[in-house]
Picture 1 (cartoon, rainbow, N blue to C red):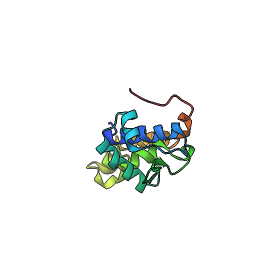
Picture 2: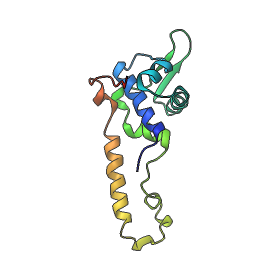
Picture 3: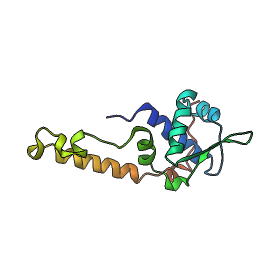
Picture 4: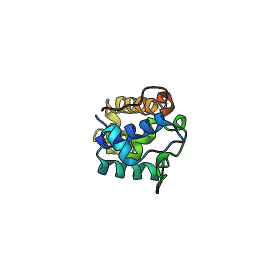
Length: 139
C-alpha cells in the first residue's frame, strides 16, 4: 500500500508552510520550486487543501498560500484524506457486506486492526511536531 504522489506532494507543501511560519505566505511557484512539485500538480493540491480548510489562498502582490490553521492542529491524516479520501486497507473494513466470506473471514479483524492503528498514528502526527526541524528542500 502506498499513498499517492499527489498526497505526498500535499504533505510536503503543508510541511513547508508549517516550517516557514504559520502566519507566513508563500507563492505557489516558491513552494513548487523548493519542494520539487510540478506547478500544475501543486495548483490542484492547493485547491483541494483550501476546500478542506487546511490552506488559505490570496491573490495580488502580497498574496500567496498560507496555513488556515495552526500546524499543531493539522494532522497527516487530514492532509492525506483531503487528497486521497478515507484510508481503506481493504473494502471489507468499511463494509463487512463487501466480504465474500463475511463472518467466516479470518482476515477481516487483521485488516480492521491494521487500519485502525494506521489511522490513529496519522491522526496523532501533526505538523507542529516538525516546525523546528530543518525546512525540507531537495535542491
